[in-house]
Image (cartoon, rainbow, N blue to C red; front, side):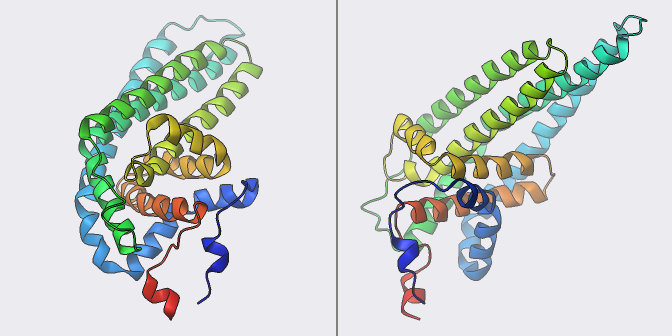
Length: 265
């Protein structure tokens, strides 16, 4: 099978194809693991811990959303414009609850899942021909620090979006659009960073890489954020998205995304 085109270093991003490719990472990773089932053993711990983390984050999201909503509705005045305020408040509370749940998820994932995700990415890289000399173990404290940076960004963004909802209609639409973009960007950069961390790429360099390949980053972040909302099944495909991120990173950098044996076949 000739994979010359896939091995060529990409010169520039292609918005639609790269975005679609980013969204497909979870499915690509799942197909890859099914094709090479021996790699599943390295993803079991990541899968189990991710299920627990996702479940805890969903519970927190639901609790925050329902608690704030009940308090908000109880304070609504009886007036003709109350329904408008109620609608705007609903959007704002959903954004708040989702943002807090996502921040919690990222922090818990950094503590309980990131190490397992990195090990899975490491094994996939070795399977695809990378040598142990070019890969390095990732600092556990460094992973937590990166997660705190990402969570801090999300917290500031979500607080700003709450204030943006004060502007009727336009502010709500803008908050949804900006919220989607920033959440997808941050999550995409985090997942795309796993294979780069293995090669000693620092946080600022990983951020620059994500900016350069923005469509791929947004596509990857979109599917990761969406999977967070699906219990158990979503956690499984988030784990396969780590494998897909390794494949995506290798394709962007002109490296083969299948073992040498397949190239000779």
